[in-house]
Figure 1 (cartoon, rainbow, N blue to C red):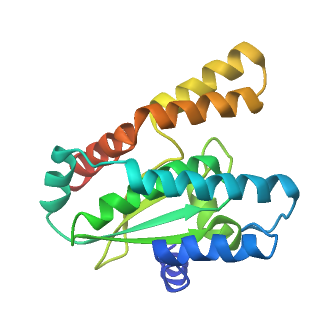
Figure 2 (tube, rainbow, N blue to C red):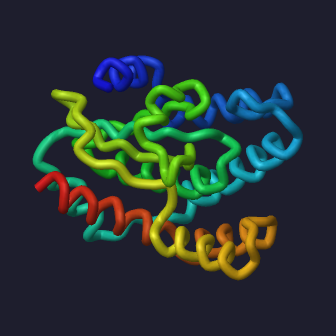
Length: 201
């Protein structure tokens, strides 16, 4: 897996490069990923607006900033994502803000469909659910922790909806988006920091 991680990092994007790629593809009427259709392009457009809003409105918790600043060594946060993914649109900007808060973290992003060999190591219940955060030791590139594809409360919301309705349909996606807006990135921050403190200290 080390070879796969090394290759993934070499072809990875910064957050600004990721945002620019999504926008430039949309200008061509496309989305990221191997599949192209009107739905995915539409979701990508929605997600650009979501990411813009999160960048302007989400604030990091003081205790989260303190923990990030006091990390004992440097880490690469390698995130599997796609521009059309609603969860990614709500989560990746928060991870970006967290990485920006400390010199100990470098955030890099790779597209899932272009890195299937890496994705196969981090499936969720056999599926390629994203986003997926891999916490890498900068020196060894060992995966010391992973997180995703969504916070526990959001995960439970979808599980409960599916149990009640048998499907994850548009109302479920709307309910999930409302949860993200109301939570303001707090669950993401807390879960990722808890992961870091439990695995890295």
